[in-house]
Image (cartoon, rainbow over all chains, first blue to last red; front, top):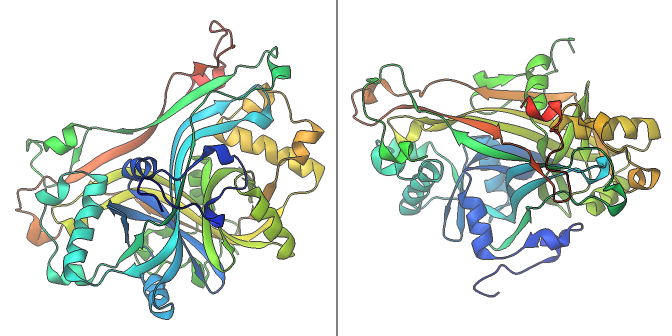
Length: 220
Length: 220
């Protein structure tokens, strides 16, 4: 494995649009760091289950919040020593791509698919690191400005770790790929950009409405 | 099964935050109709795979675009007659919920999890309906304003159908749930709204830049 890229394997090789695939670490990290919600896939009673949940990246480790469906996850963790096979997928939609033909319609997007093994984080120090990462992934800087978890709260939180090893990114960022024969058709062709926007923070009931909004929120 | 709701099953009953779960058809339909990208989970060689792809809803049927990993999907479709077990999940993030404690941080979100069996659509008429739905889900009205797929293009497109039967929604839409004991802490508490925004359409190279943008795009 080179230091700049993940090793390509049979199951991280896409069957279509291979030119969109990337195994570059910087590309993968940037896509992961631009989000905080993943779709976690696992197998329960032979059937696939896909649940959205929060994640935080620390180097080559992805920490996944186990509150969504923690019971099946914990059960699976115990049953599948030393870990549970998972697939973790993170997707950002960047544009609606309207071609002149229905067939060539697509999206501009960035996605990462991680295949691996999820293990419950049990080491107290690693758990603290992971919980901070889960908070900071969504709101960078926030973990230093809230009440840390008590021992009881830490015990009530299930965090899974997946090491980044079998990983691929897929990116499309281009205008429509119209067929040459369609060029003269009257239909509008182009891209509608899609972005995620963070609105003005809304103070909680009971929060002093005049309290200053922290700098890590106003910068968004 | 009542006409207004999906039947609740063991695997559509969440293990945590049950009060957030809903089996109401109108709730499920509204969440599905507010998106066009799902995360499709299936099992390959005993391991979970989660891929992002486009979908379109027609009544109680969800059509899923098979271009992402169509080869494994097709193979699985053949191997698992009469269909392949899948889990299809659609998630919208509506807000970052910052509580005074790290532990109470969460998201406002709407999600739908569909468990079921995916079957390739082979009937020509249904395939046309499905392809139109896939285009119109992302851009309502677009399927009537582009070149329809040729017979060759239709043959090259794999579409899977999943019937909406074992379905649940999960919704959180509330301020932070701060512990009473945390109320006096100085940390800012509240919600940062998250929305998806569609930018000004960007004409493709070769498209007359003066060509009017269709009404179904300007209304976004």
